[in-house]
Image (cartoon, rainbow, N blue to C red):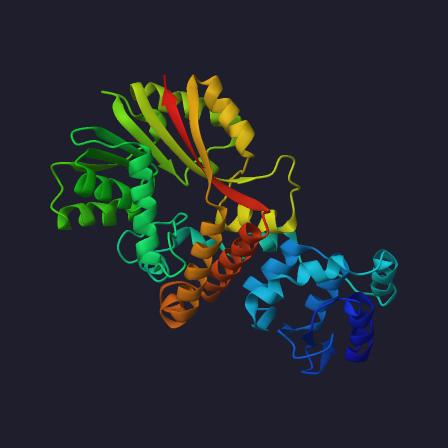
Length: 386
């Protein structure tokens, strides 16, 4: 296909889109879509990538092409990610237009095996990489809570930890368990500010090592402990309160009964369990975006709707006392993370391969839009062992 033919196809597909942007082809020629100043430029590095992506209209392939630097979005990154909406605005003869590509003899050069190999490096992300975009004080890798639009990320994450501690009605002398404690932010904050004895569980060696160091630096070794252990393997004296923040997404919907029953067994009668997790609407479609996140960012992750999640919690014996959506707060949190990651690009590229930097930039920016548009949500459910 020549660049001239490619431009004809671009106009067929995007000509009716109600937005302004540019498309730059592999020969550095470009074409303007819409009127006014373009918000971004979608750049294709080579012919085969253009052919495959335009033909397939596969968001998963778009994501992987961006990660591999075969396409780029220059300018307003968020506006570029909203290009999928422009595709939806095309008239119903979309399918017939796509057939033009087949007549031009285009083909895909990708295989499933190759796609799976693209971003393996993300499994080995270091503590230093996360420190580039998370808050400095707690390294909280979950939704912050902005009491004011002007709150810094550091203040908003402290607000979130206080929100959790107050919902759990923590009191001095109580025992708190944090399932999936990350770098120990909640257990340290709760012990330091609410007088509890706190225990955290993680499966990450990197998180464990840094959390242990943070506990020593805070002088809390006598009241805060961390274990490298699965929550299902924890036995012993029950806890007064339990928190699980951003961990339920990794449990698997079919294993919810085990998860909630384990929390029930680890809790004293009358104890409270705060379950904080990302959700989707009931019967949400499995899209290319979903495939990308589940394959390369959160392998084996699974999102459920909040009603079913709390139904299972009730089935395990819990009473649902309170449910709160923090959706707009997560959208703002993610925008903070993206801004910090971009600002620390050079440092990120020293601690991780370029594919990892691009994958996480894409994942977090796309997630920000998903929360802003209501395609995903995040809820805190306060559960009582009655």
